[in-house]
Structure formats: structure tokens, C-alpha cells
Image (cartoon, rainbow, N blue to C red; front, side, top):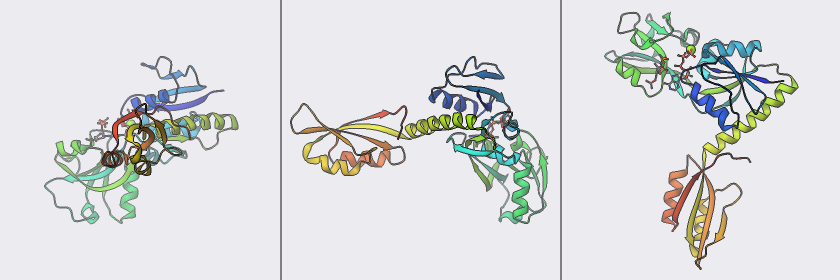
Length: 284
Ligand SMILES: Nc1ncnc2c1ncn2[C@@H]1O[C@H](COP(=O)(O)OP(=O)(O)OP(=O)(O)O)[C@@H](O)[C@H]1O
Ligand SMILES: O=P(O)(O)OC[C@H]1O[C@H](OP(=O)(O)OP(=O)(O)O)[C@H](O)[C@@H]1O
Ligand SMILES: [Mg+2]
């Protein structure tokens, strides 16, 4: 028995999806130009698909699990459950209008032609806000629609905002914040569930490790107490004596979000020779 996972064949999520499996210790065989492959060291079969098709495959149980953007999952409105947010493919679905136009709130969209690849989500947004507008569904290059007279405004994915900027558009409403998620079929059997649990355990360890750094520093013994108070650590920091009398080495784990703040405080408290090391896996 193998667990079947659907991932994007090529595009924004492909590299990160394969990389995540790799960091979970899952080596894929002959990835290049294949539509299907297997893992060497985990009972996993991998299907490479257009991202739009992944929610359907997972709902139907053709694939047991999949990696897809929340934007696509919600747009397709399929029955599949989110198991884990994966932290990559971060973007938002936004409405954008020509930069030269005034925007006075959602009512400004009344009667407008909206070009989008997300008709379901846009429709839902308009209905919720009691706005009547015309949706023009197009499958790509949405941002050029106003420039060529196809629509008045667009609803498309935004990350850095540079595509909007290059096309003379400005973002006026955010409909959805999105990232890649691991989804599962709603009725996995016990054996498939067991394999999924194993995979999710590994994913969480990898995510945790990527969000944390191991730090080592030296400090005079009379400063150690103050330094320890600044450090969280997995249990508590490790303190070891240095060969030089009166000095200690302190080891701990810091999370990425608080990292720079704490480093500054450590320096101010007398820490020296601070080393920061990446963590490969973190199991708590
Ligand atoms: N600029 C971006 N920054 C970060 N993530 C993005 C960005 N654009 C899209 N994404 C995320 O990556 C997913 C895939 O984007 P991509 O542009 O590769 O899709 P696509 O062209 O529809 O691919 P496919 O050929 O598989 O249908 C999107 O659904 C979204 O979740
Ligand atoms: O705000 P930005 O950082 O500019 O990113 C937004 C752009 O990225 C995505 O397209 P992508 O580059 O994946 O191309 P595609 O839709 O044509 O595949 C999305 O559809 C936007 O056009
Ligand atoms: Mg697509």
C-alpha cells in the first residue's frame, strides 16, 4: 500500500513541494518530465498535475493527499480537508483598479467588468457586499485586461505587487490571504491515515526546524544568569564551562521571529563570539 500525493507539475509550488518532501527524507525517483513517480524510501506515489485539478483529484480519492494553494482550494470549492499550512506560496487574492482612478470603497465596483481567474471567490465577495458587477473569466495574464479594454478592473493574485505596478494598477481590496496547504481526502482508511500521520509528523519537524536557529555563545560567568534569562531554549539553555577559567559557553534555540531582538539583547548583556547554526530537524 502506498499513499498517493498530488503536487503541481511545474510553476510556483513545484520546487517548494519537492523540496519539502526531500527535507522530510523522502527521495523521489526520476522527477524530471514525469507525470508520476515513486519515493525510494517511503511508501509514497507522486502525481504531477496542474494545480487547478488537485482539489478534484483529492476529493475523488484518485490522490489521497495533495499540495495546493488555499486560493485554488477555495475557488474549486471541493470537499478536501486542510491538514497543515506549509508556509510557502504566500500571496493574496486582490481587486486592483487602474492607478489613475479614484476608489471610494467597495461600492465603486458597482457595474464594473471584473477580469479574473477566480470567478467563484469574486462572485462570493460581490454577493457578500451586495455589489452587482460583471465577471469576465480568463485563465491567465489577467493584469493586462484593463489596458486592452477587456475589463475595468481585475481580481488576481498579488505577492510583491510588481505585476500590478508594471500594468498601471493599484490594489484596493484583499479577498483572501493564501499559502500552500497539505490537503487530504475525507475518507482515508486506517492504513492510509497512519502513513499520513507519519508524513505530517516529519513535515512539522522540518517546519519547526526551519523556523528556529541553534545559537552558541561565550559569556563571563558573572553574566550567565542575565543571559539565560533572555533565552527560551527547548527545555532550558545548556551551560558548559570553557577551558578558560571564569567563562562559560551557553547553547540555546531561538525562533526566527524574535531572533534579531534577542541577539541584540544578548550582546548588550555581555555575550561574545555568538554562533548561529541552522537546525535540520526538530522533534519535540
Ligand atoms: N506571486 C506569487 N507569489 C507566491 N505564490 C504565488 C504567486 N503566484 C501564485 N502563487 C501561488 O502558487 C500557485 C501556483 O501558481 P502558478 O502561477 O504556478 O499557477 P498556474 O499558472 O495556475 O499553474 P498550473 O500550470 O499548475 O495551472 C497559485 O495558485 C498560488 O497559490
Ligand atoms: O505581485 P507579484 O509578485 O508580481 O506576483 C503576482 C503575479 O504572480 C502570479 O503569476 P506568475 O508569475 O506565477 O505567472 P502566471 O500566472 O502567468 O503563471 C500571479 O498570477 C500574478 O500575476
Ligand atoms: Mg493553474
